[in-house]
Image (cartoon, rainbow, N blue to C red; front, side, top):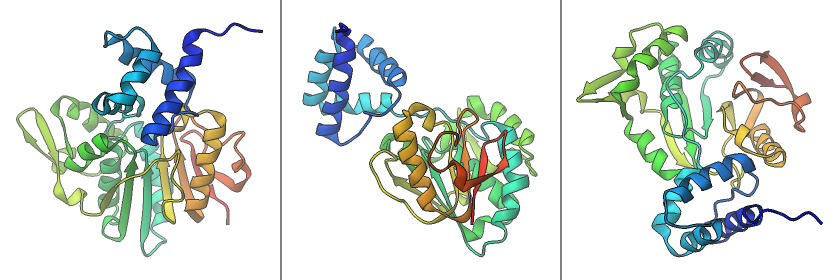
Length: 274
């Protein structure tokens, strides 16, 4: 019999406790990702083991909330991977233009930067007024930030370069107002964005949509959970709908690989077959 490290036993027990107490299911997330985040939080406390941390999570809801923030994925930026957005504009927008009304699901939107990026492209392509963007995340704190649409001024130079490389048609400065060290996104960009709490791990089909963007989220899931989420996306897309994944993500080895055709292999853009 292999002697397991204590932390290897404690970790699944902690995740089970979080699920049983709070309903958030991280049991099929990548173990490396989860362990890294938990050990980082543990290092910020006087606690000496995951078991002690579990006890605090179960009896201290404020601490549990902090840990849930740690475990969620909030890495994002405006026009992240500009070549992807350039391809989106050139290869996906013409498809969207064929629909009288357009529904887009931005799954795992975090603090909303990519949902605002999408809104900007749709405005420049004269599609925004007939589009609804459902931007969802299970992290309510991140969603609240997204709704505010207030971001640090420090990143605007980088975001402006991303926008230009992505084929932006206007001045990026037209889409925000600077105030002190922050920028406030233009109110018109929020008009057709519906911010909603949704958990990819535990919730069912969200809506029937024409385009799903879920980039750099599946890499944090194990294979079984990736397959479950892929089914959720497949069931949510109309026939001919578009699925956009992250650069390091793929449909390979999932049950639905044969049900899509590639629109852009490099940028991981796929079209659901009719």
